[in-house]
Image 1: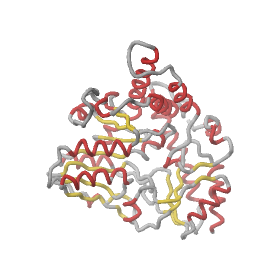
Image 2: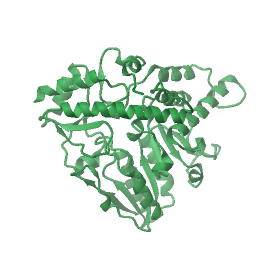
Image 3: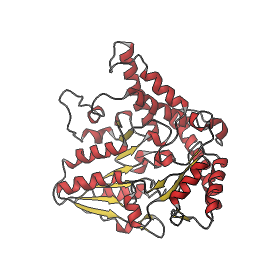
Image 4: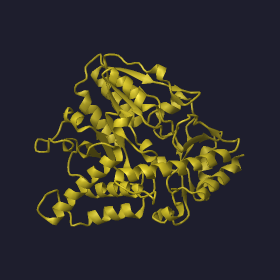
Length: 393
């Protein structure tokens, strides 16, 4: 079924003034059910986790509800769901956890398509261990990864790669990369922050050993989530406090969990599962139907957007398989365009968006203007954006 965008938008207080938001890749707007879940949990009653009082049980239920929701969202067991402050924090944490077993002369592979959050933590950890860093390059003609540049040896310990570029939208063949890495005996760490907002995630099908995402990119609060096999997590030994739990996944979650954020992140999954009102069955099944409907909605809008762009705009996204994200240049007038659009209540940010390696590899000028589509984006939003950009023709 098609998404009823008009009905959907009524759940977002921030849309009431008519602002058109195209900054979803940096963080989406928040629907009221997510905010209500946060406020309801925070105002309690609420205590630290336990099994005795209602306030303790509320905290316990927030944690278990979160793990169950992201088990459905990611396609992993609930015991394989780890909460973090952000995807960046989780990646830094796991770079340190995994690097404890790395040795001088070992190798890692990182990608020039990635957000720096899935590059620098690994490069820094590898440099400290005296390892070799190899690079997966971008083909500038297609803005896709050049798999001929993927060098794997018996010393390769990890391949870090994005499931979708946060600026180009390019979706690499993750399963193919993962199979090659596993054949070489390497682990695969996938940054799914941008991908998870636009596709049904299936961590085992992707071949990812570790997969990180950020609920605030898909209507939730600001936090991060890592999904992995519990058996794999059992092999990873973090530094931690002596009295803190040694069970998986709690051993990776330092300090008291933000129960209200967990409840909000759970509400975001439930909201996504209800995007397609015709969906039925278990939550995972409803998510699959909703994400399929969302894919059709966003791709139709992307086609409308790209068809309407004038000659003054240079679009840098060329991959055949990509998210509804468009990175463009306007001959040095990007900041002027941002200001003019803002005067029309259209939010379209400019910058390099932490995609340092992408901009360097493609020799792109910084800043560029990025347009990202979201579930609440309407045809009117797109037309207003195009109207604003038409003044640069």
